[in-house]
Image (cartoon, rainbow, N blue to C red; front, side):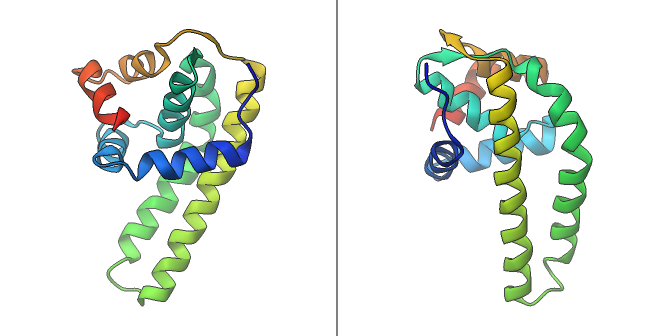
Length: 143
């Protein structure tokens, strides 16, 4: 299977995230269970391609970057009410650049742990996060 490139992953993410209910489900999983939205989207993309990967292989990478992303997200949320709209949009744009950078890191990790035919990576990740009703969440994320 040919690996997705950074642009394919980004385009998939934008399109899938825009589906009804997907953004809300991603953000709820992020806020309540510590899910990484980019990994959720990567696992969804791989499932659509008929392949799967072991999500645990991404956990060390995500753990190294979690502090940076949590701090940035917290700062943006705190400043939202006090910033002029243009300034807030600049913060949001920077966060999108961080997301794109993280996607590239996930793809580099994917090269080290190539996917295999099948499915189940998303369900495995939700189970690792101890998400109750993981199959229901899987449907919500499918959009």
